Length: 272
Image 1: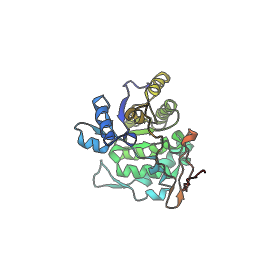
Image 2 (image 1 turned 60 degrees about the vertical axis):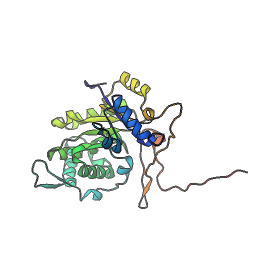
Image 3 (image 1 turned 90 degrees about the horizontal axis):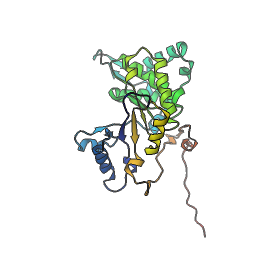
Image 4 (image 1 turned 120 degrees about the vertical axis):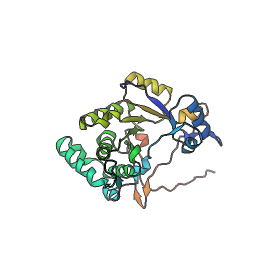
């Protein structure tokens, strides 16, 4: 790793765990084995000392399509507790400024993704950690995260970081760190930002990332932790493709993860 501190691991396997208590057992015994937390909220409530960690889903980002959807998102300032601040105007001020003075790419980031991050910040200003690979990790997700993170920092909050769930994790993690340092070199919070990586991580992937060098702080490990590879999990997940009659699409460097938008009609075909 390019970091001084070794990465930690968090259990992300609830949706793939097998058996009536598979999810809870996975959370419990991964914690016993040295994992730092779980995405299983119920397990976090039931097991003393087990912290709950996680981010939003790709579907959350896809559900937003325009900046208008984030116009009512407010946060109470930690610096002045009587001051309730509308996030979007502040975010758009930074977008305009950075597009003009640092990187013109800011003017072309995905508006729906930015609206989703603003809404997420309004709901979770103290634990703001964004999934940034729904459309384009380095040209949209990372930049949109920074726009919202800057406003939260101005209001006295500490942004947590970003999560990667597809693509070349070593390359993208180092690209995120380079972008953080290039765009906002003068903010203290930048040095504390965490990069979380998931996406079918197993021992071989961990060894490979270690050999390549990376900037990942936290590994979210699910399927390969909570299931046996001799009895693998069914490799399918829920993905949002339409909401309120409007198509939604997730992009990715991995062709298999690019969604075909709009509602589908399933047929079962019978032979003779």
